[in-house]
Image (cartoon, rainbow, N blue to C red):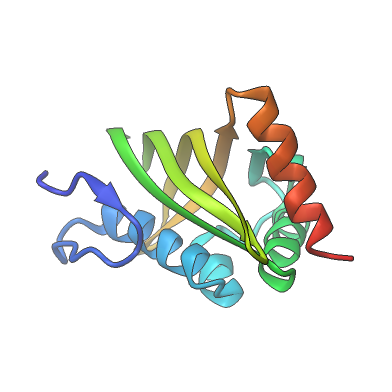
Length: 154
């Protein structure tokens, strides 16, 4: 695979449905398109997300609340997925790597570095996300990120 950076703007070969699903998630996230992000996830009570902004969320309704808070606030969060590995077995695949990006609120900008994994299952003919885990290693950046996004909702 020649694609080294995923942000939703890359051209993915049609036959690579798993990578297309991953790219589509980043397109939705980076353009704040909640319906695209929702369509990327399996609409189930059995999905999960462990995220620096939302903690542990289970079920699409809880996960959607995290994305809604990000997208509807004044914070602009942009991330790109890179340095990743791909694992597949039958109807399940995992992307494990890193995200780099930033959050801006007004004129304030914070650069982000996040360890990330995303798990997809094949649901009929489509690949749907069922799990996401993101971790920010630097405690000061994590704290500032959480404060910036929270302040964007006041």
